[in-house]
Amino acid sequence: MCSYPNSLIFSGLFHDIIRADHNNLNFTAKGGCIMEISENENLQQTEAAEALRLGKMYLHGDGTPPDEEEAIRLFSIASRNGNSDADIQLGIMYVKGIGVSRNFSKALELFHAASDLGNSNADFILGNMYFDGKDLPCDRSKAAELFQSSSDLGNKEASFRLANMYRFGDGIEKDSLKASLLYEKAAAEGHVDSMFNLAEMYSNAEGIPRDYKKAAELFRTAAENGREDARFLCTLCELSSH
Image (cartoon, rainbow, N blue to C red):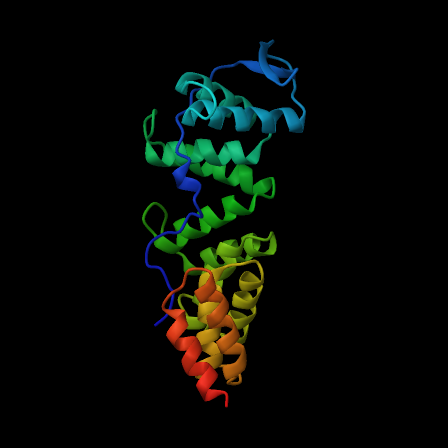
């Protein structure tokens, strides 16, 4: 029993589907409000982030009546001013064809732009695309590189996906030690499935020394965080450790 999802995991990013338009508008922050100003104004990083935040508010009707057009404008502005999270939002829009014609080339351009800005979620999304092979040619080696880059930037989902690849030798050379270290890294950041999988490796001596005590601790923590199937395994490991 292992936690190895067959479908793409986008760490919640695709739950923030947005529609976008490419108006040549800009804004400035003044008194906590977004004001439309000249096209040539350059925004500070904090102002672009505020545009993204307000765009989400307008999109979801969070504290304001829903206004999709305003959300579109603000997302586009944030993207044009170097906000990598806005690049991702617009890239998702092009992948899904929400509000615009589906344009995968444009989506890739935006995801790569976000990646160049050091956005771990962009590398994670691209890694998933290469891993899945639906929109891009399947390339597990390239997926592993992108997951590694994302993991290095602190993305625990990427650490988990890469650990699975090393654990099962999925497209890359099997390496149980690397898998265990990546699970451990993600588990330390609260990734429950990584706790569960690492506990399995300890309990089964899967490329690492058997350690029922560590396995029990990990299964227990996973159970306390929603993995109900870990409770019985925790008990078994506790009994086996005596």
